Amino acid sequence: MSGHGHGHGHAHGCGCEGEHEPAERGLEYGLYRKIDLDKLQCLNESREGDGKLVFKPWERRTERNQFVESDADEELLFNIPFTGSVKLKGIIISGEDDDSHPAEIRLFKNIPQMSFDDTGREPEQAFRLNRDPLAQLEYPTKIARFSSVHHLSVHISKNFGAESTRVYYIGLRGEYAEAHRHEVTICNYEASANPADHKVESIIPQTNFIS
View (spheres, rainbow, N blue to C red):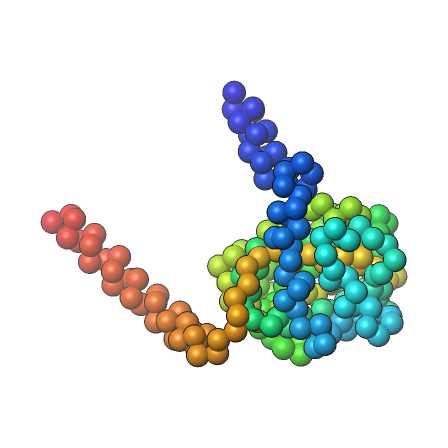
């Protein structure tokens, strides 16, 4: 019985790519519409402007006519500004079914104009990737770390051994809210004050219940 239960849960988590609401899946991966493409940067792209081409609609995710390829080595760095605030929930990266496919990505938030010199810092999250030529594998983010993202940097740090890296599709799943600068400022103040508040609240009720 336990094996059956595990199998059912696994299917629920991964089956969305196929038969379960493909149209809804496409809507979930609509964050590409909220990217400020004019300001998007891709560092170490072999041809200028190609990095923008991999952010495209869900139904075009397996197309092979547009892609970005790295130049001097296997690394690529995408600086992705949004037109508002994003809660990032998942990412898909699709490449060729060979050693040029990205093998590792590192995600950073809210560091505009990030350069390769900045990639030595600790990322918000990192993933080891599998080859995914059909764009079926989603890597879920730690949503608490990606709940107020205005700028996302995706560092492809290595591939599977080729001299250059090729990417056909980057899909971003999440929620979007219009930018309101004043609200963002208030949220930042609240975030810094909350931990102390919670410590006090968590101690007092416990002592009351015990006595």
